[in-house]
Image 1: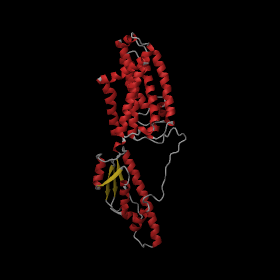
Image 2 (image 1 turned 90 degrees about the horizontal axis):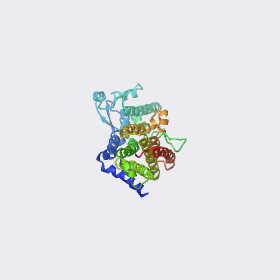
Image 3 (image 1 turned 90 degrees about the vertical axis):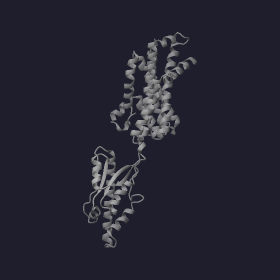
Length: 393
């Protein structure tokens, strides 16, 4: 057993001795995780979208529109002129702008058609979000106005329309008079597909799974390199059996992949605040199962190819393809039903399902059992194929 661990330990030490390996296995994963998590993640959630608003009316009615946008968690407003609002959207500086024209309140009081203008970039999802907020404000204004008309008729104009409108609008705070509460009901507690992880969490989980797979494949390629330069042949001349060499090299690949997983888990927790520690046992079960599956695939591929160059060509293609199909770059939930089924044929897909349920959705060990079982099954099959067909000389 000590000989097996000595061979495995040698693989891990080689990782730190080769500067090019350090770049591929340590620097590159950390940099890419940071870049994608920062550029596309929710790291900018604390900085609200600034919406230019041209309020030419300046009445209690237009105030409802401005405060509706201002009151959202991810939006805020700043005042501009109508010409500036149009220019900001036209030149791409702002994805959306709001114009409340002069006479807006007068038209409401006179029971005439009143308009709020939303100028937006058709490609902007933020523009669509702000449009929905404005539509909600318009509904609120219309409801208030109708209630005021009823009150005016009943009170014979004892108060002004604007005063009654302000009174009616106050009834919406702190909560609307009628609200809708949405709750998610799932048939299977093991999968909560309606929930979606924050984007930073998506990228932290996704790149952890992706690079564990890539590193396992790359480390397994070292076995072919040692075979080509004759290191394995010389190793067999020592007092070790072929099985000890196979197990030691396979364990070495698993140790490198485990190091990669631990490094990226720590990076995600420290840099992005990903809640990896909600259920450590469940997370560990998924990651260990993933490491074994990735190791099995790496050993199997190294047994099936003939040269190091072939392995080098296959590794990035195979790992990237499994990452894309398995939901490492984007959630599987947003893909078509067919692609979701295809994703479940990959170890990356099952790893992402388990990790998102546990880390992003707060589920427990029960959510890890099926993904871990599938991953361990994949590991068993690929390890048997790889270790029985792997040539050492």
